Image 1 (spheres, one colour):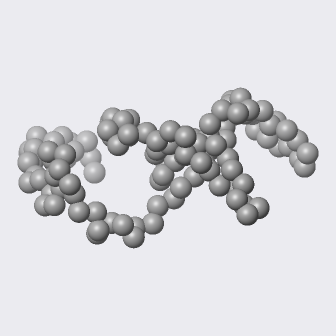
Image 2 (cartoon, one colour):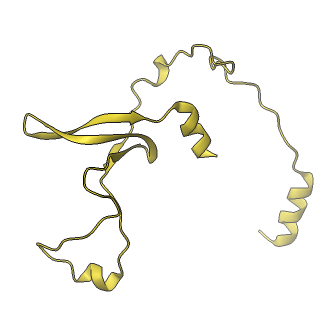
Length: 115
């Protein structure tokens, strides 16, 4: 598409006001979530992060240690579909790793971070 036609489109575009979603309480009242309860989401825990050069990345091998930006004992970050929702600590249950949530971020705070 040429720049001229993009400009013409922008001149004719107008703002559209949408009706509120039915069943969603804008006033903070109860919302029926039954429709979305079975939607799968990805839950991920992050121990820490670091930045290294490609040169150093290519030199990694079995036994290499990579220093992360988080101190031992600090809580892990818990993400749902890439959004930080909580902090927690690692636990072991029946020889499997799990996470105990120590701090859950409020829905209002999560929405604020999306903006």
